[in-house]
Length: 367
Image 1: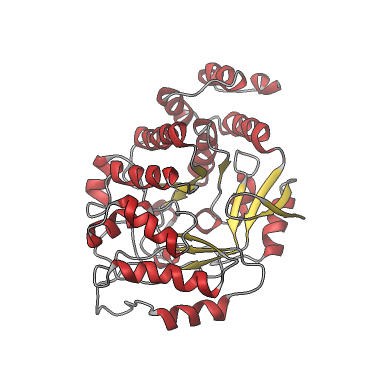
Image 2: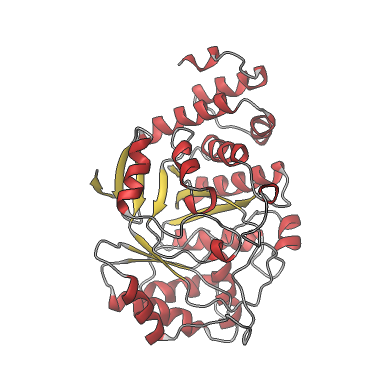
C-alpha cells in the first residue's frame, strides 16, 4: 500500500499507519493524534483501507420508515428540539388507531424495518410502549421492529418497576427484534450531567445493550458529537462501545451523528464542519475495529458529504426513512427522506456497489 508515500503526509501519523497496516488496535492516544492532524487525506485513505478489508466496495442501505409515537418527554436534553411537555403546543401521543393510520398512509411495499423512537412520556405506562410494538408487528408481520434506545429501556424499567432484562423480554414477546442506537450521546458522565442529566447514565446505556445482546438481540450504537464534548471524550465513547463489543459481539454498526443546532436558521459556525464530519467517520472506522459497519447519516451531514464518506470508511448510508422528525425538529437542513433510486445513485456515484439489506445486514438485492 502506497499510503506511506503520500506527499506532505503528517509524519506524526506514520506509527499509526504502521499499526493499521499490521492490523493492530488503536489506542486513545492514537485517536487523539488522528483528530489533531490536519492530514485528512491520509486519515481517509487509512479508513478506506480498513473498510475495504471488511466490506470491499459494498455499501448498504435499507428501505425503512421512522416512527415517533410521542414527543412528550420528561427529559430536557440541551440538544433536543423534538420534545414537548404534556399540553404544550405541538405535543402529541399517538394512540393505537392514530399510529396505524399514520403508518398506513406512509407504508409502501419494500419497507423492511420500522425504526421507532420517541419521547420519555411518563404520562403513559409501560404497556403503551409494549402495545406500540405489538400493534405494528401484528399489522405488518414481515417488517422488522427496531425500536427504542438504551435510554428508553432504562426509562421503561424505572416507570414499570421491572428490571431492564424483564423490560426487553416483554418487548421481545410483543415483537421487538432490535434496539436502535440512540440515547448514547457521549458516554461520559461529565457530558451527560450537563447535556442530558435526566436520562440513562453511561453504565445504564451500556447495560441495556449488554442485556439485549445476552437475550439474543443484535443492536445499533451511535455517538452524538459536535457540542461540548472534548475529543478525548469522543474517543472514550468509542472505546467503551468497542469494549462491550469485545464482550458480546452484539453491535451491528456504529453511527456518528453530527449534533444539529436548535434552529434551522443557525449559521454555519453553529454546525459541525465538513472536515470534522469526515474525520469523525474515518476515525470511527479506524477505532471501531470489531464493528463491521460505520454508517454515514445523510440526515445530519447531507447527501454530498455522505457520498464522499464512502471513500473514507463508511459502508452504510442508512435508508429511505420516509419522514425523519427528530433532527429536523432541531436545525437539520437536509432531506427528510430519500428514495431507493436516490440512495443507489449516491452509492454508485462513489464507485461503490449498492446493496439493499435487511436490519441485520443480510443482502436483499444488489443494484
